[in-house]
Amino acid sequence: MDKRLGGLLQIHAAVLLFGLTGIFGKSINLPARYITLGRVFFASFSMGLFFLVRKRDVRLKSAKDYAAIIFVGALLAFHWTAFYTSVQISTVAIALLTFAAYPIFVTFIEPAMFGEKLKKIDVLFSFIMFAGVLLIVPAFDLGNNMTVGLLWGLAASVVFAFMSLLNRKFASNYGGSVVAFYEQGAAALFLSPILLFYRPAATARDMGLLVLLGILFTGVAHSLFIGGMKYVRAQTAGIIASLESVYGIISAALLLGEIPSVRELIGGAIILGTAFYSTLRSQKEG
Image (tube, rainbow, N blue to C red; front, side):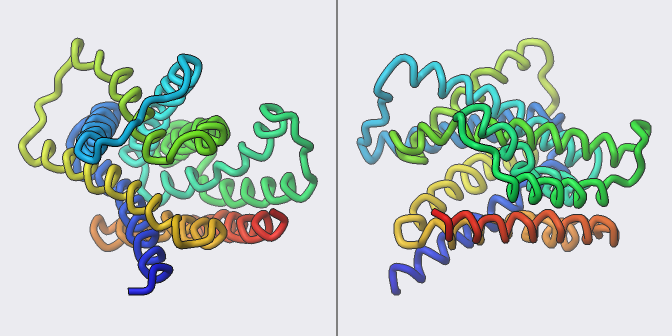
């Protein structure tokens, strides 16, 4: 098989797996924070075993890097907890689409963090995406579960924006899989104390799904994506990654019977279309 074709298939498979992770929020009968704990624990554990078998050196260069990556791990713990809370309170579609709007926050946070100039075109894209988010809002009422779920999704989106910017440094110094291993391990450590206060009665089915979520849909998916990046341009990978929400929404419709409303479809098209175009434009400029 042609290496580029193999890389494309790897990235598509990874994005499909990532898109399906929202389904677990509805399928596992546990609170969101416990789903997140299971996901990061089994993901980091499986990746650690992989590194051990391959005898790969995963040590970081400095104590400062360890401290920074642990901090990002704490953000990851909140990000996925907020995401699964959004899924459980509202729908997979709302959680995925509000998460996909994270470039809105990157636009304004990035210049502040890196001293870069705020571009007018990026601000325009952000307002267009925000208009898409407003279309998804079912009612401006905190008594509406869909609205509360949307707010949790936006919280996950804000935190992911910070994470993506903080990871810019690590991506240039360490492999993506090494960064993921440490961040997921740190997230597991931050969430572990919740077991001291309350241990929910997880069934064998719940545990099996957590293992599947952590190993296949997180650890393996991440490895596939990184592996595919060796043979595929970053622009192409970014465009494919924008399909995550599409895969997730279609899967939720087929498996859970969650059919998005017309407003959600229009808002989602605006968000994803803007993200898609922005990816193309940024790659051409780069």
